[in-house]
Length: 618
Image 1 (cartoon, rainbow, N blue to C red):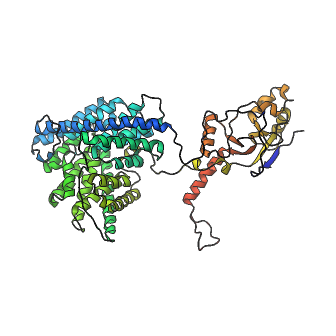
Image 2 (image 1 turned 180 degrees about the vertical axis):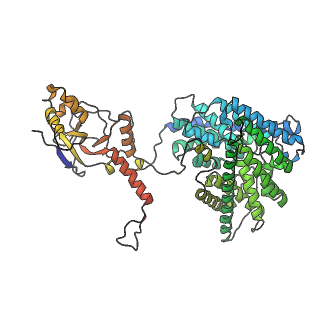
Image 3 (image 1 turned 90 degrees about the vertical axis):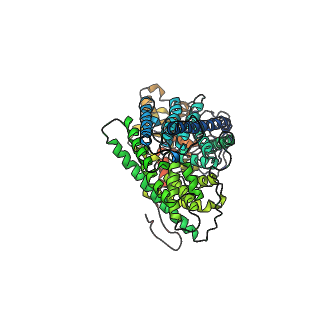
């Protein structure tokens, strides 16, 4: 006869006897390390990342200086025939056939660099950085680190209507990634240093360390952990310390509006945000429609930047100030040193040439054009609103940035840091969140992620607490467990599995006092059936020396899932960490139930106050 199985529900409150001296102590974790319960998973290794972030932050700042100097050098050579790295505005450039030829030649040079150098230099850089983080293990090549700033300098210097921030984000990221690749580091640690370099580059360009860190959180890190947040913040702080020596100290566009809006003025900020959100949605839609049109051209993409350059040059004949980075336009919008006719011309021409040039696959950033386009529309709207048009231009810039990049906090902090005006923080927040709401509801993807999705990589940018890390094993384990007695013989186990009764695939083996000894699987029984000489041995003798993965009640469900993956186990016994007494069992389907409960919390809707006996509404 088969020794009967035991079926029990463990009472957790009962006193547990001390562990027997002969209880086998195995490394059940499969090489994984248990950690004590706490708010964060960060350990002392973050100190190493902080030290590396100091170096990467310095490298990102220096790369920003090199990029800005290259842009100024190419601009002065192409348009004014001067060998100088002093920043110049193209407002003084003469309208001539050269104004059309220069962008075309620049686009041709970029097409050749992308074709025979690296295709990754095409575009504005941020999608490529995101792709490297999510898909490439945060590994970027030295070729990209060299060609991206060079191609961007040629593009912008020959009149391309772009900014330097996208290229420096990619270049700074490449510096951080290359530095990390010299050491034994995980992909997550390389990601931290890649983003640290990107944040350092952006900080050096704009003097906006808080916005750079927020951009990292909202756009690049895809997490908010001390392990990554602290080194990125350190790199941005190091970069801002270098900035007075390589650029200038203080805000990039120092402005004080001294705004004192009435309570209803907040509603106007909402309107400004909605207008900017609609503008963002329109530009994003047009950008990818034009890009689709380029895909239908009957010649190789290497020539597309030259076509884009032709459109840029023709736009320059209409409004030369639309060419280049255009920081002078931002300054004039904020200080109201501009007239409505010029603002309208810049808005229309800049939007047209930027959309075509970016769609053509040339190299350059999107942030400065977004600021100009959002600021120009905000300035025009501000003519009908109370206060200075420059104030509404600032809100338009921040809202355009926050809505288009889906980074509202970045947009608000960025506008504050480039002006140094703390009085505008609340209006900025209202406008950027309003624009963010509009674009989230109107568009499935942003201007940054649509390009990645078109390459077959779909991402989500919603952050949340991992339910596997929030839940403990004791909360989901099955406490009523069918077990085999350690005294059962191999022969009896074989008879049991050969019977008609429905059996499980795995049975834990326990002693009389409930101490876990091991597991018996159907595979074990099939092996024993071919060895009749094992029939007289007990299950305790067969399984007691086996090193098996087990969990503890306080382990996170995430740790249990990792155990399953590392040991290829479908079920993990949960035992008392001291006595080894079996407390329960977790199977893969229990993990799915946890996922189901999370989904229910998102979708199930029902009232709890003022309603009785109502079915859940969905």
